Length: 180
Image (cartoon, rainbow, N blue to C red; front, side, top):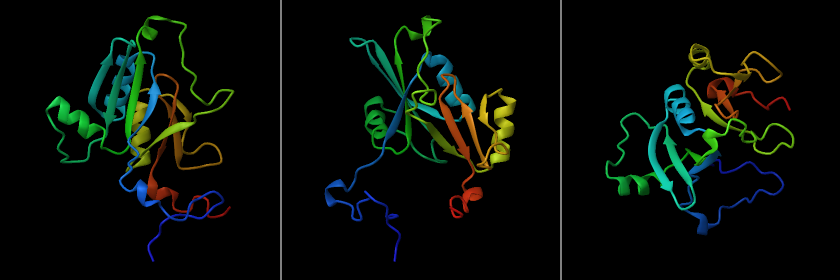
């Protein structure tokens, strides 16, 4: 039998046929300064900017970032690339409300200070030790290194706006939660 879902209170055992084809496309983070955030996510995290969409009447811009697979073909035409972007899985949308970059006192709530809400995004990496060395060489701020705290083999770093990013190597987490 093929696995479909863990059963917990509130979990629907069957997928409604009406939801067939639904794709989790992106999560959005508001950023103070897009140049600083784009540098971090493209240079340090290896993502590529697929599309920038400006909305002058509402004074904001959207930046859609993607971690392309080796050999993946992305459309050159802006319209085709926009449609392609909204059909992908696991994108990061950075939203910039114009003018925030010029206000030295401006800061977004990271979701982890009180009152807590949003927690973090996560990147899985092929080699956690190599990723930590990469982050160290780029002066990335840590919330927690893999050898700290009760949960080992998981790191948490911060992006330029203070949002937490979990970093994990999937193979190291096979026993996670089995002793609970």
